[in-house]
Image (cartoon, rainbow, N blue to C red; front, side):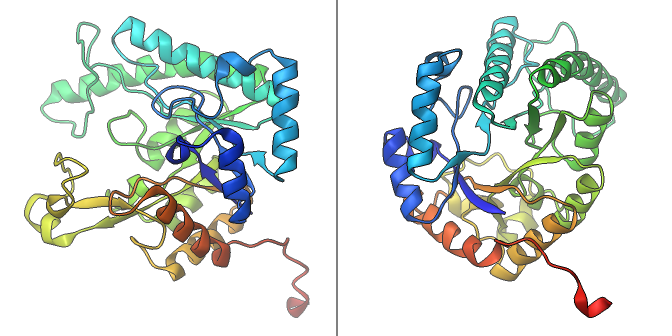
Length: 322
């Protein structure tokens, strides 16, 4: 297992500056944005796609700092009811997959997307209950749209030898493990999870159970190290479906936190151990979105904790069991 960083919080640095900073902290992988919500500050698709000279320079730079790319990130909504927005997201995703194949990067990370509730709607609609019954019908329609799109996209990813790691995210069609497993089953094995526990914590989902559930299906393609703290003082009054702004910290039911500030070190060690149990030995890519601290302090504290949690060696023979 190794520690990586999703690099948008370091957008004020050049790629080389970010690599040097992270290398000095003991990080060995980056997950740069190449479009969509993460932007492309460190890896512009148009500059690298099909450009062997630029790709060779990137490889040399990564080697200099003993880094690798764990995934290319392109989070957007390819199922958006606005045709132009959906087409833009689809182009970003497909070009990211092409680029990943050219760079020998295993995974592209993103969202499932979210359709409207019917062919005539103009806004994506996150369905959270089956009643009144038109909501159940809308949800069925959304899955038809999603399976049609993702079946084609999964075949495209397979042609390029690249996995797509979908982040289970509320306000997207796939926001929990059962939905993730369903999309994988209805497409192909290139579709799996970019497992981000931060969105599952506040839904009340057991992280280790979710890891086991998806791990048994070989469906974890990538992992985001990101924490969340539920603040019961607010949740007891208004629950966790919270529309208060993220920077209104005092009045929110939950906040994204740096690793260790939502759950303690023993929890993260158990999480890492469960990942190894199900066969995931890849990168733990830190995503910093903690509004109570700076990007650098949040990253550095997360790196410090995870360095004590990750396993750096392969397990040996269980000689004590013989």
